[in-house]
Image (cartoon, rainbow, N blue to C red; front, side, top):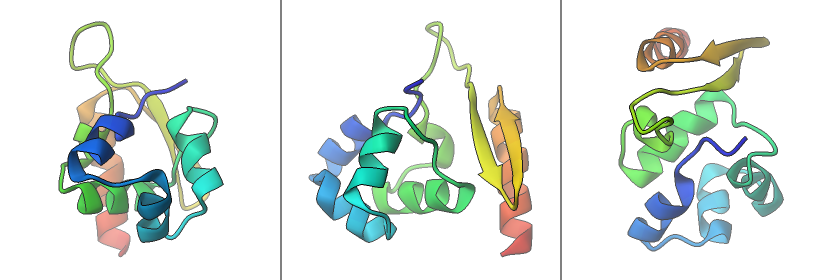
Length: 100
C-alpha cells in the first residue's frame, strides 16, 4: 500500500531518489521499496525524511478518502504501531522523542 507522499515532496526540493536515500542513510533500493509501498520506514527514518524535506511528519502521508485520514504502520523499538489518525501518529512520535 502506497501511503506516503514522498515523490511530490522530493520533487519540490529538487531531490533525486539517490540523493534522498543518501541523506537518509539508506540504500536507493530501500527508498524505492518505501516509495512503492513494498515496505514502510521505521519511525526514526520518517522523522529524518520530514526533517530533510522540511515538513511535518504527518505531511509525509497521503490523505485517504478525500479527507485527512491516515492508515499505516510504524515499527519502533520492536513494536509495530497501527496508525489510523494524526493522533495515533503523534503518540508514536512522542514516544520516539522521549526515548531519543
